[in-house]
Image (cartoon, rainbow, N blue to C red; front, side):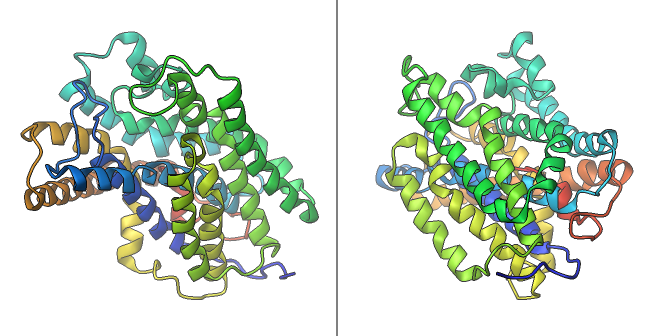
Length: 390
C-alpha cells in the first residue's frame, strides 16, 4: 500500500481537465434536436439527418458525464483545499461569491433576451436563489438559463460541506474503500428507487422516462450528494496514500468504455452510474500524477486558462447556444455551413466564458475569497474555487 504523500502539492491538471468536461456539455447542447427555450426548435444545425442523428446520439451522454465529473470534482477539491479550522461563515461567503455573480449576470441576460416574457414570478423567483431544481416540474428546473440547474446541487453541497468534512476527516483509513463503495451503491440505489417507486407517468416528451423519473434521477439535488461525497472520500484516499497508482493512460481509456456502457444501458443508468468509475479514475490519476510530478498534458498555461474560464463557458451556454441558435435561420444547414455554425457558437461561448471570468468571477473572488491551508497542507489552489463550476 502506498505511503501518505509527505509533501504539499497543487493540482493544476484538474483545472485543465475541467474544460474537457465543460466541452462535453457543449457538445451535448449544440447537437440537441429540442431546445429548452420555447418554441423548442432544434439546436442541431445539420440538414443531413443521418449526420444529425449520429451526432445527437454520440453526445447524448456527454452532458451527463460532464455534470457527474464536476460533482465528484467539487467534493474532491473542496476537501483537498479545506483549511482545518475554517469558520462556516467564511466558507459560505467564499462559495456564494463563487457561484452567484455569474449566475445572476446570466439570469438577468436570459430574462431580458427571452425568458422574461414566458416566466412567471413563481418560477423565476426560486431560480434567482438557485432553488429551482428542487421543484419536480420541467418548466421550473429548466427555466430561464437552463444550465443553472446544476448550481442548485452545488449550493446544497456548499451548505452541507462544513458539516460533512468533519466526519469525513475522522474516517479510519482502512474504512475509506468501504465508504467509497457505499457512495457508489447509493447512486445505484437511487436509480433502483427511481425505476420502481417513482411514477412512470406522465411520460416526458424529451426522454424515455416519466417527467418525475427524469427529475428524481438527474435534476433533484439531494441524490447527487453521493457523487459529491465520493469526491470527498477520494481526496482523503489520495492524501493518505490509500489509492494505488492508476496510470493516466489507463484512466483515460476507461472513459470511452464507461461512455459506451452509458450509451448501451437503460436510460437512467447513463446519468452517472455507468461512468462513475472512469470519472473517479481520471480525477485520481491526475491528482496522483501531479503529486509524483509526472506529466499529464494538462498543466500548461493554455489548459489552465481554459479550465479557469470553464465555469463561465458552461453557465453561458443557455444564452449563447440556445438563444444564439434561435437568432439564426430555423432551418438546418448543409454540412459545411453546419460546421461553421457549431464553430461560431463555440467561439461565442468561449468569449462569453472569458468575459464572465475576467469581468465578474475573478474580481469578485479576489475581493471575497481568501486562501487557506488545505488538507494536504498547501495553500488553496485556484482550481479549488471552481465548481461548475459544471
